[in-house]
Amino acid sequence: MQLYNTLSAEERAIMIDDAGKQRLTLSFYAYAQIQNPTQFRNELFLAWNPLEVLGRIYVASEGINAQLSLPADNFYAFKDSIEAYDFMKGIRLNIAVEHDDHSFLKLTVKVRDKIVADGLVDETFDVTNIGIHLKAKEFNELLEDPDTIVVDMRNHYESEIGHFTKAIKPDVDTFRESLPIIEEQLSEHKQDKKVLMYCTGGIRCEKASAYFKHKGFENVYQLEGGIIEYTRQVKAEGLESKFIGKNFVFDHRLGERITDDIVSQCHQCGKPCDVHTNCVNEGCHLLFIQCEECKSAMEGCCSSECMTVTHLPEEEQKAIRRGIKNGNMIFKKGKSDVLTFKNNEETHGVFVADKPKTALKKEQKVKKIYIGKGTHFFPKPSIGQFLIEEDEIKIGDKILIKGSTTGEQEMTIENMFVNEVASKIAISGDTCTFKLPFRIRLSDKLYKILD
Image (cartoon, rainbow, N blue to C red; front, side, top):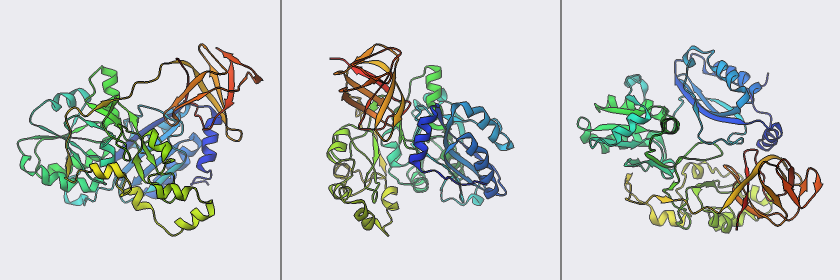
C-alpha cells in the first residue's frame, strides 16, 4: 500500500509533459473535528494518488488546508472523493487565476498540530464566532467607507508584490506574529472603526476574525474566499479590482498576476519588479525579488558569495552545505544582509504604509503575433516541439516563448524540423521542433516578434 511519493520532481515533471493533460491548480480549507488525523491523511493519499493529484496538504484534528493541482479530466472524481466526508460537502474550491502544469510536482499530505500555525490556544475563545463574510462587491463598497481600516493578514513577502489599496501591511515573517501587533496598533479603534481583513484564500482570516472579536473588536469583517475568490468574482461581475499587483501563491509559480501594476522593486538594484525567485545555490535558497538583468548578472543568486559557490564542483558544494541548516534563510524570505537595495530601502516600522502614486505599469511589451503552443519537450537533446496554429515562422525569425513558469524567453530560429523533416518554414497546421536552452511547458505560447 503506497502512502508516499516514489518519484522525484524531475521524473514527475517529465511524466506531466508526456501525459499532455491540462492541469488545474486549486486550494480549499475546512475546519472540522477530525478524530484520527493520521487515518484521514492516509485515506486522502490513497484516494488522490490514482487521480494524479499533486500538492501540499495539511491535516490536523481541527481540519484540512490544501493547495494542489490535478488533471482537469479528474476534477469531478476528485470532488467526489472529498465530498465523501460530510464536512466537505459543497465546499468552495478556489480555482487559481493562472494555471501551470508544474505548480506542484509531488503529493505531500502531512499531519500537523494545526492547519495554520497561528500560535493561539483555541480553548481560550470561541473560534466559531467569526467576522462577517463579504463578497467582492460588498468588499469594494466597504473599502470606500472612511470608518474602515483594511488589514492584510499575510506576511511581508506576500503583500510586497500585491495588496489592496489603502491596506495596512504588517511587516512580519509569520501569521502568528501579526495578531498581537495588529491588536496593539488598532487598540484605540475597537468600537469606532470597521476592521476589514483579507488573506490569500480566507483561512487565516477565519481564525483571526474570531480572535479579534474575542479581544473586543466589535465590527469585524473578512473577505470571503480571500484574494483568489475576490479575483474570480471581479472578473465574472465586471467589477473594478481594488487589489493591485500580484497575489503570492505557495507553489512553484510564486505568484498570480491580478493587475498590470508593479508595486515592488528588485531587491538587488531597485528596478520595478515583482518576480520572486529562490537563490539557485542549493545551500541557500533565499526567496527574494530579482529582475531579469540581475538574474542574468548574478546567475540567479542572491549574492556574489552564493554565485561563487555554484561554480564549484558538486562534491565541494555538498561538503560546504553538509550539516548547515538553511531553513532560517528560506523562512526569512526577502530579509537578508546580502540584498543591497532591499536593505537600503528597508522600513523599520511595524506597518508599511502605501506611498501615493507608486504603482508602476508593466514595461511596454514587444510587438508580437501569436503563432502556436508548446506540445512537448525532449529533455536529453533539449528540443522543444510546437504546434503552429496561426501564421508562419521561418529560419531567421525572432521568436518569443512565454509561460507562467518559463517567463518570457526571446531567441532567433537558426535550424528547425517541420513535421520531422528539416525545413526553412513552418505554416499553420505544422508541427515544428528546434533546440532550446531551457525547458518549455505545455502551457507555453509561441509568438513571432515583429520589427
